[in-house]
Amino acid sequence: MLVIVTKDYEEMSKVAAKKVAALIRKKPNCVLGLATGSTPLGLYRELIRLHKEEGLDFSKVTTFNLDEYVGLPPEHPQSYHYFMWENFFKHINIDRRFVFIPHGMADDIEEHCRWYEEQIAKAGGIDLQILGIGANGHIAFNEPGSSLGSRTRIKTLTEQTRKDNARFFGSIDQVPKYAITMGIGTIMDAREILLLASGKAKAHAIKITVEGPITAMVPATIVQMHPRATIIADEEAASELSGKYEG
Ligand code: PGA
Image 1 (tube, rainbow, N blue to C red):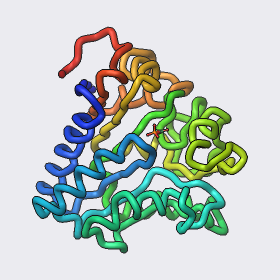
Image 2: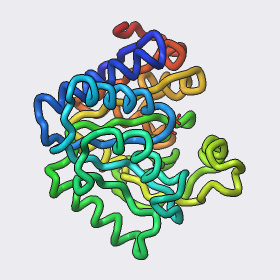
Image 3: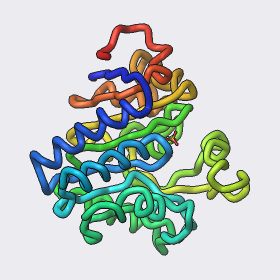
């Protein structure tokens, strides 16, 4: 596992964007796994800049998002559909037909999850998966205790995650209780993983993820098993690491 420590959030975002852009240039029809949350926003901003100023071409890129809240329609301002279009897709030349995000209003959620996995397989698998990390070590909505071999499915959100996300909803009561999420097994099938972390609140999760034992109680620790995983953490997020890592 490669750990890169950057000065700050800005540099973390730029280093990540460079990696993503290099892949798109090398393989214009690559398949990206994308994440929501505050962490990847700087990465998306930088990719938008590269599209506008340097012509980075997304027209053949396929994307799969990690997760979506159950019960929120795509036009809901807190849905991950809305987040992705507002913060990224509407600013680049992505082809709508190649954008996949789990549907929070699916009638048959189990069937939808199966379909989602099938679409990933049909696209040839994910080349590069972007991940954030929760303060409790979750990846996507795979909370502590999730099976390390899990596939896309419906999950109950922990109280902690609902609290963490309440800031976007106004109050915790408005935060949905369930989400559809790619499984840990789905994430591990990606050919490459890029996990981003910024800020003090993530320092403990990053310490355990990089240096702790692998455990389902900290789902992110599974990335230690991935043959091509990179963690980009800013100095604050890396502040509890005891090893020496690339600066
Ligand atoms: P954040 O969320 O990027 O908003 O910190 C990350 C996560 O909970 O996975």
